Length: 430
Ligand code: AMP
Ligand code: GLY
Image 1 (tube, rainbow, N blue to C red):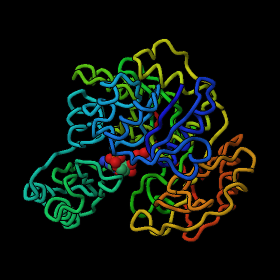
Image 2 (cartoon, rainbow, N blue to C red; image 1 turned 135 degrees about the vertical axis):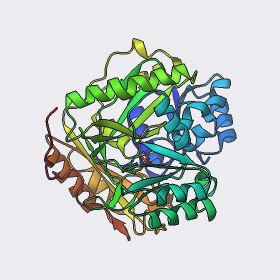
Image 3 (spheres, rainbow, N blue to C red; image 1 turned 180 degrees about the vertical axis):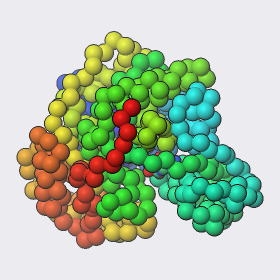
């Protein structure tokens, strides 16, 4: 088979790394890819949101399967166009991608299908939003831009004043463009976060090993939100009972809801959840593999990934057996570039990648990198993700940071607390 992976981040490097190990696969193309994918696959210089050129590429290269990494091309209808051209694709059409592309739509969907989530209200006028904020007594609250904002559209606000400033920035100053024309204001949920991803053909869902992402830029969950600064799998606090609740109260009703709304969904459903005292609640849906979640999931997946991707694309997931997982723990540490998640440095030469990769059970997935001459240079806010397996979280963590420490570039930084044990919170057994 010839497989085309769309995207150029750490997620796509991890997918390319895993997919090319499949005996079913002859060639892997990545568009546009990065310096890491260039070493193991063929990069094609087409941006991930150039739907027309990607469809042409898939046709002219006679690609057998397209795996779409980022959300934007899905929202723009890439999967619909590929399906119309009779090319197998893992990723929902534009109607399914609305689960991620519109927070207002996602909230309506969650409410309509009685899937547990934060209480919320939608606004398309700033005056009404501000009047609502002025009347609130419970803080903090969460304000979310409706549209895609690359992880920058969620604001936790502590007062009406702070909230009104955000509303003005989004709705009047249009800081996030059209994405902020509508907003959702919702209750603030407290608990541990968890990312649960499943590959689905709309009828059957194959749930991947749950992981914990670390969204905030600073140690101890401080500072602004990012795309994700590190990942741990298995999730350190998830119990089998809570996982059952997630399956029964979130994942199955999500699939049922999609079918009831006649939305065909062949791709990845990614539920970002808060494990609250009153059970798991959905924070958001994504319609694709997570980044950096995928880096850890691919390290732990022992079975061949490709048969699942093909089966989901063709609506035949029911015929697949459950995959085998490496029982060891995985920790992934994201190395970012100074300034991220704001304006960041780029163009700095990266040294030590091979030395890091040479460590036992360490694999470095590149993200914001590009080849300059024969050298990898930084080219994004999240530059790479050092993943490591270990017999337990502690060993995986030590190995991942040992790998991270071998890598050098100007402006490098990471959180130092990925996979660290957190203080246990008191709770009531239920
Ligand atoms: P989202 O893009 O909706 O997942 O939001 C990004 C991040 O903001 C989440 O991963 C959470 O860390 C945080 N967040 C979003 N919604 C809430 C909420 N209702 N309560 C607390 N934190 C939230
Ligand atoms: N790490 C969160 C995401 O992929 O959206």
